Length: 298
Image (cartoon, rainbow, N blue to C red; front, side, top):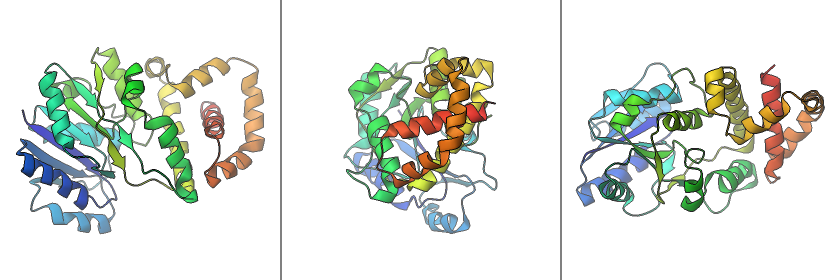
């Protein structure tokens, strides 16, 4: 069984990450290939990562940015393995035998179609990066037992293996290029196709937490992406289980929608200032997202 390790690269130094992966491939004699596709990074990062070209036969540099969904679909043109392992470029290997764990899982479960290994962050963060860290710890980095209770809602694209045939059947929706909810939409497309997502304990460290201000910008971008999805009736029904969508659907046809809109317009600045300080309840972030969604759904 051959494994194609697929890493979309964007404005990040991936040399250490690739070195660690190659080290395990060589030491464990794993049948694997590494494929890198740079999504029109800044020139400084292109020059840094070009050091890898001699050891990586497939390192593709795109002239124009095509976005998070299309670039993952693009790997199908280059991957020769039966299974594809997708990793975010800001990841870091934190445990021994990372690749071997995935391979052993596939060998024990030959019918498996897709496996999510999980994610983790460092044990603490400074004040400037605390909001992203807190969200990761409380909402994203769930133990495998909890992930298995909601296998589709717990899926993320930072660290997963998928059978090539399954990705060819259910690719990422190319209409959404920006950050936000493309992973959940993909998971729900898998669910609609009756493709089971398995979960194991094989996390990757998120090695590049955004500071509070940058993260809030990404939150706004993600809500904008979600609003476009919800304006498509077919996609809206697929995302009905998402927590933010459930709250929106519950309130959108009630008088509270108008009240919330007025309160959000008045209090948006204060909420954003609280969030920018980082160490606050994530309920403020939930309110901020909901207020943004109502605004963008007008």
